[in-house]
Image (cartoon, rainbow, N blue to C red; front, top):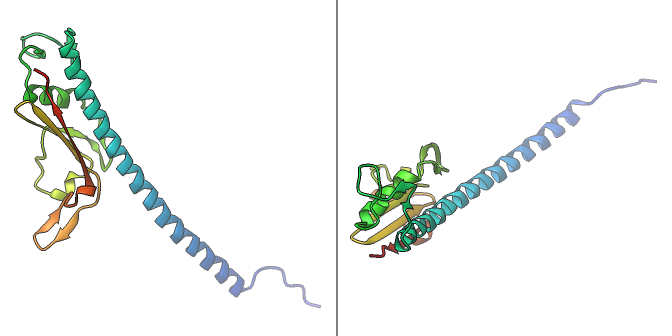
Length: 170
């Protein structure tokens, strides 16, 4: 009578194949999960920036002595509520929010004064704060770049981005 202890080659191959299939499915699921988390983080950054700018502008409206973390006044390094414009508020917000990180490029800040990138693929995750007169436009691209005959276009579809306008009170 033979006593075989161990696994046959076929049994080992079946187990390795099953592990390979499970690893492939898990990798795809994990990639989808991380992409969704980055998109949610970019949307959250955008909403926080919009609320912050509106709240700090409102502080000036009620006569606060401090806005954007800066003492109100006219000396260098201070923020002047009396003579504020969309441009001064946008600049103060960008400098005050340097701790926000881009979820797609975590080594850089997420809030910037405008899209200075020529590589449109690099626009994902940034919160662009741009002022025109007394209106501040906050735009964030959070979805994949699409390709067409002219090359890459970030946020080519409205569903790929979110934008808000904030009117500065005078």
